[in-house]
Length: 177
Image (tube, rainbow, N blue to C red; front, side):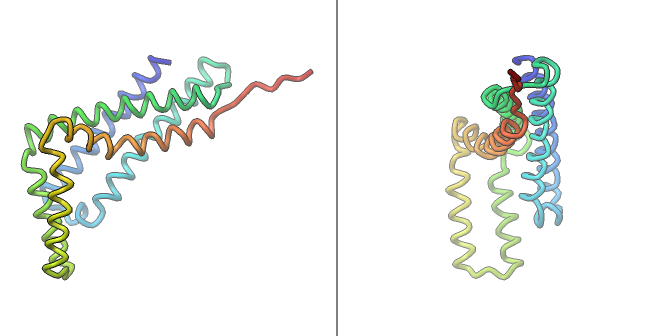
């Protein structure tokens, strides 16, 4: 099971990381697509990436367990893949943020404020939005906070897919008397 977790987790982690870097490139280029659909793009790509969990559980079940797997084992395998992929994603983001895009919080806040201004938000609404983003990005001030907030971004998606995969793919042998 460990090998399956590492292989599929690495694949999912690399795919998620590539999508992250693509997202940051779109943000930095001030892509209008990113500003309209950035969150949708991000979470859709995470969901599609974590569909690898479903493939991993099915592959393991069919290849090593003669087509049968308990919910517990399917869930554990899915969680392992999700955690492995998320860890790769977090490591890539921390390195990317610290070396290539250290001004990300300021850049993101500026872009979001400009977007809200274009939508006609009032000065009070803009001030409230600025304050909320400053609180959100205050976690970036420490390495532990940066790592934790990044895990909170991706890992829940993986947990949901792992749970779904366990529920759908569990299969017990039927015993006939």
